[in-house]
Image (tube, rainbow, N blue to C red; front, side, top):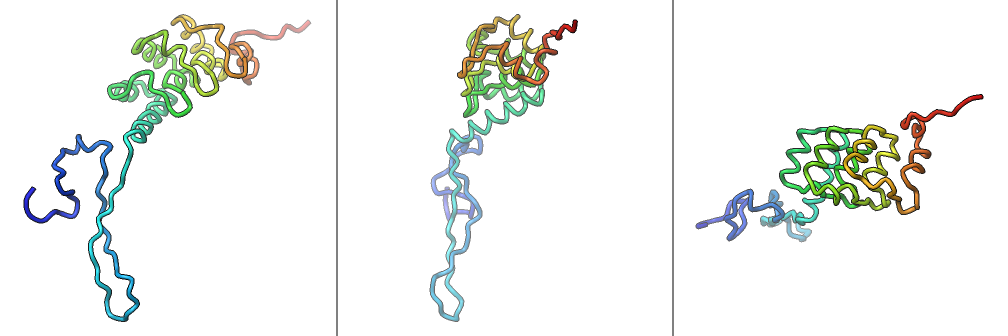
Length: 187
């Protein structure tokens, strides 16, 4: 790089935009005025500003977006996101796309996620509440997701951090009894 720098260029930085992921982002330079209180116009100079975005933050944003897509049941968009992230990618609460798909009842997406990763590992990943995807499906009374997870090999005896199993969570959910097709018998 020869000559004067443009207002968005950094000295010695000849990386392509793809190489700048996680690197400081140059912002529009601001003019800084001198602190003098004289009536004459103050001297100005260009002060470049940089926005530093840690790589960890960018990854967390990607993971959160994956979970939002899984919650919404966006199968195609989830497949695209999984090109950059592993199926086991979790947010700061330990929730994965499989947790979200199970809780929302998106069975086709759930099956896609199970087939895309190490089945035993992702089926038993626990969130910060100690919930596996199967327990998330139970907490939201998602019977179809529950059945698909059991068929995929999820542990039916899993318990969360409070010691609640699948039946406890189903009973606590507003539609839990109906989700299993169980009804109170009236005499």
